[in-house]
Length: 390
Ligand code: AMP
Ligand code: MG
Image 1 (tube, helix red, strand yellow):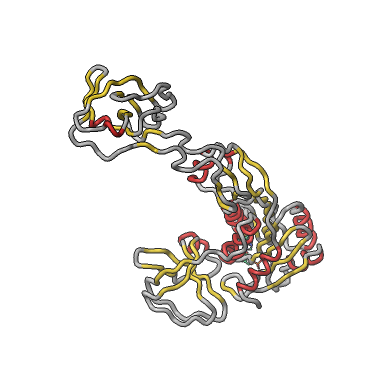
Image 2 (cartoon, helix red, strand yellow):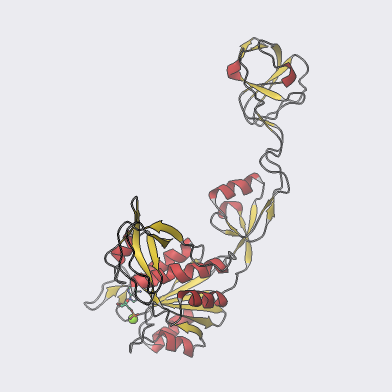
């Protein structure tokens, strides 16, 4: 058995960044920027008023001074002329500041009568003008790689970039295996259960920005497994769940090997998730996940998500770990790295008593996996531990 760290480094050896495609800006949210992009325009492109008020010469802005209003500048409609001595232009937020003016007096500090204004007694420091290029200058770079956030989308739009180079979505084929499985909504026989892993895995890979292909359930026969593996043709990553232990019906490793899978490891010293395998299958990477529902999703967080991030060009790094304190004591750990389902509470991490790898109801309540190193001793309430957030 190898450690989680070794297994993950083997997984990274199996994957490489996928190609680049160009998508419309409106579809770029959550995608990974693949190449640096440059602003095609400065923002603001002109000195702009930050307030509603009057644009005039700052040197003339004395309390009680009077000005003649010679025009209006609104957002999208600048004032074409020049502001001379003793003159002001009515201006609104976002409007270009007219030539000759270098300060905006907020309208609250002004009394207007006809086309004349008088400034008030207490004027603020101003100048309420956003200089041209104050936010970014034309040519400013957004570096890659970068997962595009809502704020990034606004930034790229403001930079006048209608199309964005992103990593294409890695295609992930998902294969559930087992004679006992039926799809939700089907009529299960008395000895059958509903296949759940594939749906959780689909959600997990889509959340990472991949395209999931949910394949038909493979039965525990060589013929059925071979057929379904055939349907995975063209995928970048093939995920199986179940059939990876050493029972008579656990054929995934053998069938995959028969189809040319070069195995890079089998069995990892972790809990849950020991019967994990990975290898190369033609052009695709293959990760054989355990069948137990919690194991398959925990391995999804620990191995599949980092693998997808590497495929998206975000680099080869383990799932980010956070540090938190325990809300209650926990017992000593055994020889395998343990990913304990826990909840983040105001008192710290509350580890669930029931850690069986078949308990989806517990996993669904968890928002953290507390990571226990092998042979970690008992831990008291208030002690600091590492965790992954779910
Ligand atoms: P296996 O590794 O095939 O022996 O499966 C271990 C356990 O996980 C068994 O109880 C299976 O019934 C269950 N299992 C396997 N695949 C799935 C699946 N796709 N959804 C839900 N449970 C599964
Ligand atoms: Mg099975």
